[in-house]
Length: 129
Image 1 (cartoon, rainbow, N blue to C red):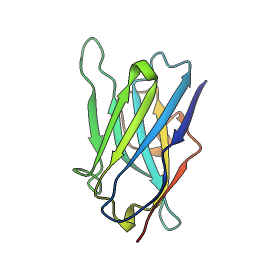
Image 2 (image 1 turned 90 degrees about the horizontal axis):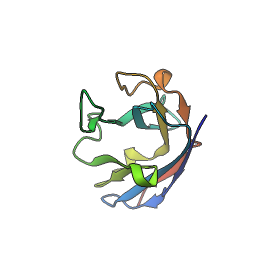
Image 3 (image 1 turned 90 degrees about the vertical axis):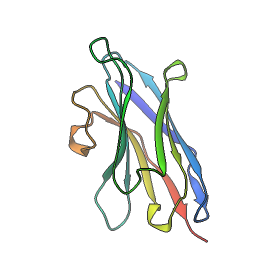
């Protein structure tokens, strides 16, 4: 079992920044992929960023972004702290949503909701003036 707990959400003005954190606990050996998703009242849950942990045959983490956030958001992780991050800059009202972190033990890493194994409870981000 893996437990994921998000934090760092809240209200922010357009153009502002927030950093979301996802604390990971449990059995994570072989958990190659982590991702951030978001969902608002009018859209299905969408993947916005993912990170694949490097391994022996492919060292170095690899990141993936949806077009809607590329260049504004950055996904990263601190393995020593068992924490996943999402740095969100230049926020827009359309970024308002509930944000979820997710993890997968499968490869390749994707930003498809049905391919994730574990989910956090979600945290609200509201971008408004």
